[in-house]
Length: 137
Length: 324
Ligand SMILES: [Cu+2]
Image (tube, rainbow over all chains, first blue to last red; front, side, top):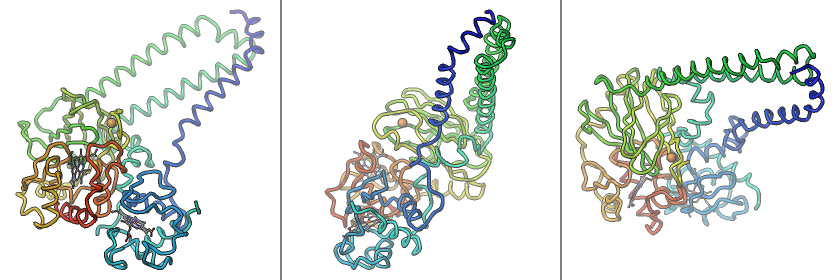
């Protein structure tokens, strides 16, 4: 191959060079894990609340906005929870009460079919904060 | 109740944890895979850099260099000789490494048979002559510092056994036994997954590998081999288990429940996860799983017991929790 041909083709090949860079760039971007599968390490009460909900497996019985899986149906959906008048149809909807209910439902609503959950008091408060922060929809 | 652990996300962590478990070896067999991976990354980077440099020369470089990279010599060396030598070298390295991971049993190692089932793992601990010592499911326990040979097979379709921290991946093939060597050099819990698409809820098919230090290991062994002293309080939960069909699919050693279609539940009370590595194990998730497993793991082979009243679900869960 002569240098003349190379020189001529270099102008012609510029778009191809750009395309090559675009492909390399696209590959690099594609290698990043999707954002929603990565855990938020730190944050406020609401972020901690969501992580706790996921780790505790509340989704085994509830559909919860922001939790993509699982979406159990033994318990009521917790969508729009801040609009609910009474917790589980019986208790005033206040943060302290909600946190207490989440930790040990039968102890504050005798006969409740939601079992006690393995959360500390402060963890339950974070979970309650997350539930109150959900959008109205 | 036990404090929260992050076992809920153990499968997520097996793949997305930081540092990536596949680059964070916890034993010599995984180490060799990691070294090969880094070598491949480095090689890939090196070749990419050369190609990009050549591309730059071809597009913008001085004419003299351009002529050079188009020459026959460069094509002969860079395009034929170099790849031939490097790829052959990597092939030999890779094959030797794989052979070391699947080296046949010498008699010194511990043996564990794991059978892939749609969509969970049957686990059997074997004696030196291949006899089954005891059974378990969705969890493998190994001692630190001792090579363990996993004898892998499948009851239905092809699955793949992968604990990124501990070893390479190995297919589980129906009608065949494949071997995989594993050794942990530190104690810990490591996430494992099925790494071969096997239909339906394949993405929800995982397990946990637990590596124990010496004393802890003998304690664990005793807990599994000692005769079972009673099997939890008699009563509603036990009755329901025997009468609602659970016993037809699940075995609980020491009781009349001897079903084989589902995971062995003899030690379900001390299992770290439920649903094959996907949920933490506590009263709430047990009830949720029994009452509504089809919402949690759509298509799995256990029916949802949503017709059972809440008291019955609670009683069943309470009895299962006692099966340590
Ligand atoms: Cu699979």
